[in-house]
Every structure is written in C-alpha cells, then in structure tokens.
Length: 193
Image (cartoon, rainbow, N blue to C red; front, side, top):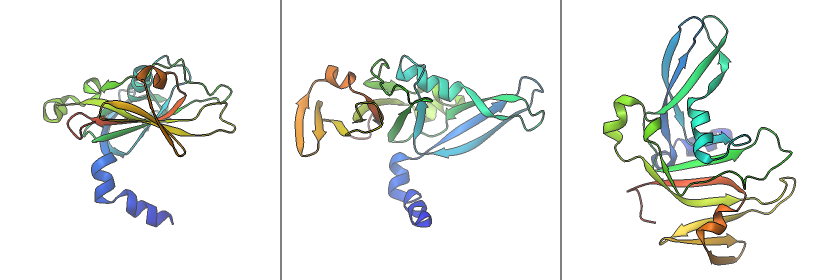
C-alpha cells in the first residue's frame, strides 16, 4: 500500500494543489559550516505548546533550530526554512509536545496569513502574492483521549460548521474559540472563497 499512496502523493493533481519546496539553510556558529538545499513539503506541522499565536509558531518552526547536528563539528546547528515555491493550498497541523493539555484556545489564529517574511530573498519578486486566507479548520474538542471531529468551512465569505449530517452558519468569533487541530489556507487568487 505504501507504494500506492506514494504514487497518489506524487500525482500531478495532488502536487499542483498542496506541494511546495523549501530552501533549507543549515548554519553552524561553531565551525562556520553553511549549506543549503531544497526540500519538498506538502504540509506544515507546528508545535504550539508554548506559543501565543499561529504566527509565532510558524516563525519558531521556519526560523528555529534544527534537531540535527552539524555534519562538520557535530554541534547543534541552526536550520531555517524559506519558501522556494508557494502552494495554492497550505495545510497546517497544530501539535503539542505534551498532551497533558490539548486546548489551543489561547493560541491566536489568523484569518489572513502573510508569508512574505518566509520567502527566500531571490524568489520574492517572482512569487509576488503570498497572502493566504483561512478557508477550513478541523476541530477536535476535549482532552484528545476521545473525541469528535468537525469542520468549519468558509464558502461565499460565510463560515459554516459541518458536524456529521448538520451544517449550520456560524460567525468568525465562534470559530476562533474552537480547538483547532488542522488549518487550511488558500493562496489569494487561487480560488474565490
């Protein structure tokens, strides 16, 4: 099955909607070793445990430290991710390092997410529009041990809660209080909301 799913992942349709490339820059302050390389991606997994906002978690991940050691001196090196290409749809999973408290209600989500600060310098002019709009949220309330998922989706500039066979209109403030576990952002100009 793994080969089957890998083929689907690599398919033109999936990759044209969800995939992008990072330029990864690893730099060691101990031995001055620096290297950069391209890395494919299709989602962001952000640790939000000690963050007050989605933007903070995004910045921590993209500009944070690498868990790997420098290949030259074996000391911890800094790893930064910059968008080399941008996906039409950006998928973000919100995780916690510890599962003692699942609630993300104190994490400020954003309806619009600009990525200009995270684009590799020489690509900024080419990629131009890098503003993303929130169009979907997967919600899992409760402790995380058991639970029920639902989705909040935006259509025609209105938000709806899709919960089993029930679809109801809701306001944006209600969405911001939900325990989001996955976010879907669409790049401005890709589709109309």
